[in-house]
Image (cartoon, rainbow, N blue to C red):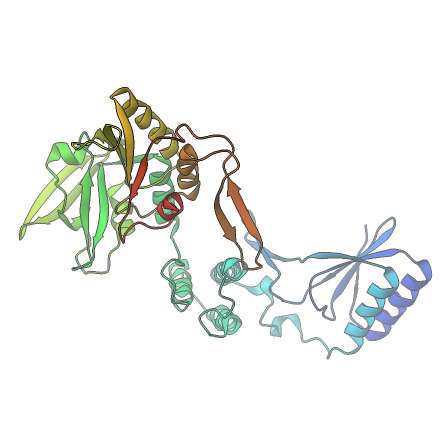
Length: 398
């Protein structure tokens, strides 16, 4: 197939007249066309693609190139050709490609990274005022800068997202993202310690220690404050649990050195990383009876892809021990994977019951409902929450 680049107004008029005569269909891609079109003849259609630098950017992960595409609209040839003709005739003469701020071919990898990060947020963000700022101008300013490294580009993305004033919208480095996904799916090599932020001192602490993990065997205790891990300091008040987790986790069998603060003194540890099965669900029989007898308590610390199956197993075990009333303890549960919360809630609901509605920026609603009857629809159930119950845990509660 041959392609012909057309940039003159007279040529556009000629194309329109030929198309009108042939009465064939025309596919138009993109937003307002520029003066650079590619016309590719096909058996029964003419495909017109505009290179206009609009926000129709799509990143190709394999080639790191940005392709400009857009929604496809099927129009009668006469109308489409006329639109293209008018657009070209009334546009100013095109500037040379090298002078265009949106010339993606000349972008560095760092600039393409920033443009793609901006596009991802632009596509999904609900608040279309973007915290009452010129969101597009932020993009333009950022991609005009020259960056010496990808680290500088990541810092720029963090700054752009920070301007939104939304603590739930933030950039995760590849290492942090992998760490979170591994924790959520239960695929972790670490020492068996749960991390949290001390809200008073804004320092990272051990909120819980797995009873059989390397940390427990080595003597690490809950409320220990992390000062240093493998030479990386975390005592500046700016570190997050994710920051510490990235360094604590590593290859199976490798060593990790940690310095923690306990009651004003520092304690050193050298531990060996092992496969860690995160115990996010624990259960026991309460010491006080309920309305119908024994109370089975299920403590859920966070939601992962395996939480629903684990809760189901724990409930069956508690019933064998005589529990007839149940309490789900979600205090301090920050959430986790949304499907984990939805699947766990489904254990206590009838079939076709709505669980959660998710709306995107366009108001399109994704409704998630139960697919089958839960395992227990009749036993008395109480859900215990506090101010730190959030995200998927809130879905479970509701």
